[in-house]
Image 1 (cartoon, rainbow, N blue to C red):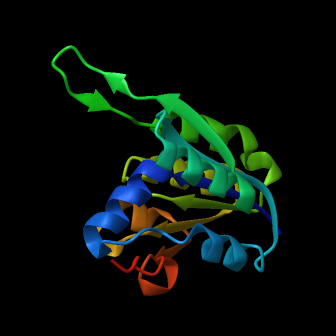
Image 2: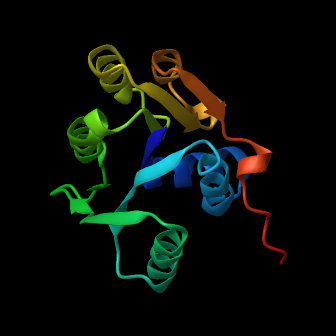
Length: 161
């Protein structure tokens, strides 16, 4: 089975922090998914910042096996900031889905529900979503073939103070 992984890094970071006060364990996730088939594509979409902790995190993702795809944070005239990869993730999934048996999406964003329904119907692929249950859209949960809740087994141990 050919698997493509697409990670909405900002969404996973903020939802696991809000729900559990902990970070997602990408290594445990990778080890689990690689037992399911061949990972032929693994993209992690993040916002590029020049902070050392961000660079270390991105290097860790690369070491695990992810392609880290960065874009800058958009600053609006009113001073707010936006960092959104929805369109980029959608394009990459649409361009690669013909070569995949399963699309694995890490996000809680309901905007992806239309995409998942489309690729399941047109390309007959399975879709798996990993998300924090309380912060994942019901639309997304109901659109995928399989929903895997992010809970304790998918979280890094808290750092001792």
